Length: 323
Figure 1 (cartoon, rainbow, N blue to C red):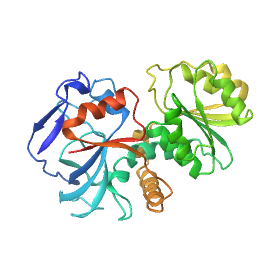
Figure 2: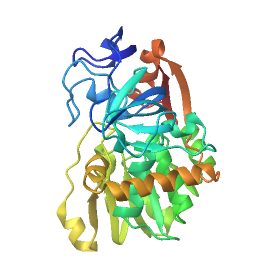
Figure 3: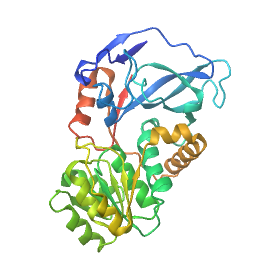
Figure 4: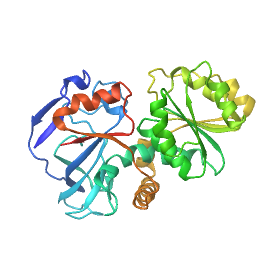
């Protein structure tokens, strides 16, 4: 089979397309033929050796995708040969075939297209976990989403609106904000660290209840300062590159909660809740309530262009590869 492989931790530009043997399912595993693999920002980090998860070399990137079950190992359950499934594997989906634990597969309803299902697991799973399980966001609350045009950010905009929140989408350009408005943002803001706090307070009338921060860097502290009494600050990631240091006195003065969102650890520790979240997301897509925005679909040979969109933070929605 063909696979996109990382053979050295020097970044996306050194990935290689190679022929490797087809995988064989082990106990409890399924072999899935990948139709579409979805890339995430962390894929740019994992192939550079700068992500917290470090698979042994060589490995294929691509933490999620959609495909069809071709074979089952001994004891594998929950899926059958021929099932169309979404895959969450952490890595390995940028290949024609992948062997993965059957428990990491979720059957896809017929009403959900491949392109929408491929990138649903990680981005929408992360955002649903953040908003529903961590922040416990309530209808009518103000939600500020930093990095609102990226994969997880756009998912947070859509889910926040669907859950009844009043969404303020924050991004780096009006072009990106137009997409956020089309997906449910009530207000939008081209953000600047020097004005972010005052602008969020102005838009929400001083009542920003939840900040969803996938950006970090210089944006974190002013966003934290914009929160209202007992607001919740969700730590999603650090796309801006810098890991901020937040002054604890701010949490004390307004009884703020800073909540980490480690979706990968959550699904390992609470698999039943994770599976319920996945079914909830797929049902919303099938009902037309979520769009699962796709930036573009690229052939395996065009991987430099696909990864470049992520490293430049130019993607608006999911970037998909077709093995």
